[in-house]
Length: 462
Image (cartoon, rainbow, N blue to C red):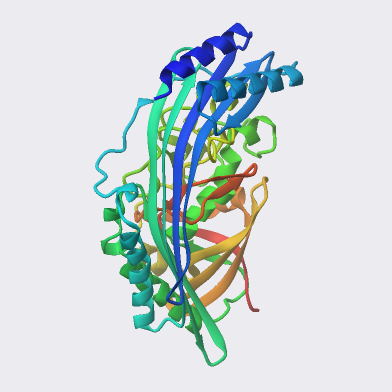
C-alpha cells in the first residue's frame, strides 16, 4: 500500500548518507470485553495506525514514529530519525543481511473478529460467565479479547515484506468462599484464528468449567511441605520455565553484552540429555502464529537446546550483525511507535517419551504442580515462581491437593536435574497477557510437556 512512498524515502535516506533505513507501517486493533459478576465492566476497541522509521548513519541508529502516513508526514519522521542518528554519531551499530519474508497471509480464517459484531463478541464473555455461575461460582470475571494487525516493512536493498497478525481468546476467573477459606481458579485460552477457534476445549463454557474446577480444588488444598524434593511441572508451568527462566537468557542482546550466563557457550552441554528447548514463530500444537518478525524477516524454528547441548540464540538483524550470525526472526516491536528488539515468540520444551502417569508412578516423594501464578527471575537464571495448585505425591500416587507453592532455584541447575519428560506438549497463548521487556509488551506462546526435575527447592510448611 505504501510501497511507492517507501521507495522514495529509502532513496532520500541513501542520499543523506544513511547506510541503512527501514520503514515499518502498521495498522493494529485491540478489542476487549470484560464481564464482572454479570455486568459489562469494559468494552473497548483501540486502533493504532502509523509508521516507525529507523535510519543508520555513521554507526548510530535513529528511530522516529508518526501517525501521519501522508508522504509529508513520513518524510518528516525519516528526517527526524536521521537527525537523531547524526546527533548520536560515532557508533558501531550494524544490521545483518536478511531475506525478506515477502507477502504472507494467514489464510483459513473463517470468522475474523473484524467481521463479527459486538453482540456476538459480548455473548462469548457472557456464555463463560453464565456457565461459571451455573456451576456455583461466587465471584466471576470473564473476558473476550482479540488483537489483529497488518504490517508492511520496507528497507534498504529492495527489502519488502507484508504480513498479518491475529490472536483471539477468552478467559474466566472464579472465586469460591467456604468456612473462612478462599479458592481461586483461572483459565485462559487463545490462538491465531477467527472466532471459530472458540469451541470445544476452547469454548467459553469449557474455559469457565476449568476455572471453576481449579477454584474448587484450590479451596480444598493445603500448603505443601517445604524442602528439596522431586517436582513435576505440568505444561502451563513448564512453559513458564521455558520462557521466563531460560528463554530470556538466549536473547542475543543479553548474550553479546555479557549479561547472560550463556555467553560463549554454544556447543556446550548445559542440561540433561532429556532437555530440548525450541523457540518458533508458530507450531501446529498451539501458541500464537507469527509469520514474520517486525523487521520483515520470516520466522523459523530455532533450536536453543538440543538433548542438553546449547545450540542457538535468538536474533534480530542488529544482534545477528553484532555476533556474526544469521537473523532468526526475533526482532519484535510492541507497535509502530517502538523500535524492534530481540524478543521470544513461542518458547517451549519439546516432547519426551514418558507419559504423565508414568512420571507420577515413578516418583516416590514430590509434587506435581499446575496453574502458574507469577514470580521473579534474574538474568543469571535465578528464579522464584509460584504455582497455585498441585498434588503431593507419595509412592507414585497423588495423595492430597496442595496450593500456593513457591519454587526457587537457578534454571541452569534445574535443567541438569530433569530426568523425565512426557510427550504431552501443549503451547498456550492469550490476548490478555504477554511478555514485557525494555518497556515493550509482546504476545507470546509458551509451554511444553509434563516433566520432572529430580530436585528443586520448595517453599511451604515444615
